Amino acid sequence: MIDETWNGMSKYPVEFLTKIESNDSELGFFFAEVIRNEGNVIDVHHNALTIICLKNKAVKKIGSKIFIEEGVFLRKPGETTNFEILSPTHLQILMISNAYVETVLKQKMSLYDYSKINSQLDLYNQQLIISLMDSLGYISRGNIKKTKIIDNIIQAILNVFINEDEKYHDLKKSDRIFWKKVYNYVENENLQSIKVTDLAILVQMSERHFSRKFMLEHGVSPYQYIIAAKIKKSIEYLMIGHFALSEIAFLSGFNDQSQFSTLFKKKMGVTPLEYREKYMSHNI
Image (cartoon, rainbow, N blue to C red):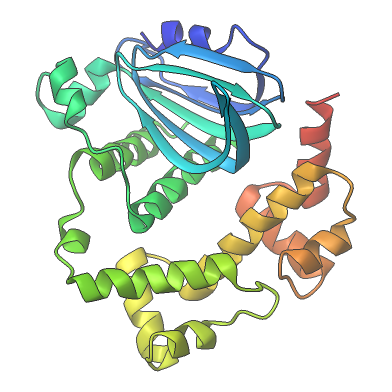
């Protein structure tokens, strides 16, 4: 099932950056980090549950409509995807066999059962999926066989979609607005000057109290969240191609090129230059 779905997606040019897959294609998964060149027409009938994480903003066309898309997307068995990519696109794809899903959930899954899975994630759970997919990416880039860890990560990804995060969804409406205010501020403010103190002031809390609350709800510190936002921004500039690394460091909000390179390699496993060279080589 996994191979059939992937072959459907691969009949147009695809460049693999990394990939990992289970030994048993019937009871397993397939994860890949890929680059799709502009001008690709995507026409796929999904035979397996598929999670797609866009690592940059993708310009897409459906019919006569052109729009920019980013974030996390779920494709269920039986669904069809049809659109044209108008820009180079960097994405992570995780396909999970029906047998694997049934093993994790300990129940048989029909197309009707899949239809009930919530594919509209709030900002909190989108960030959670992105972090989990990145973890699979780290493992795949290192060519390390860590079967149990991989299984745990995939089960966690499934649980985000299958089981609503009761702790988060039990929050009062005011708390939901609280976190959205923080997310929007990080997304839209100048990352060069943003500090944890700014976020604490935004929601009228002490920095210490805010940091503890953020860590409790998200599993990472506000500082780590800000750094992740800066790296995400830097990848957009790296993929454009003509910016110097010093310019990208400034535009993405880092203090200097040295800090940018150090933190980028720590999170992505390669230096910014290596990342760009690898990306550009896949688009020659």
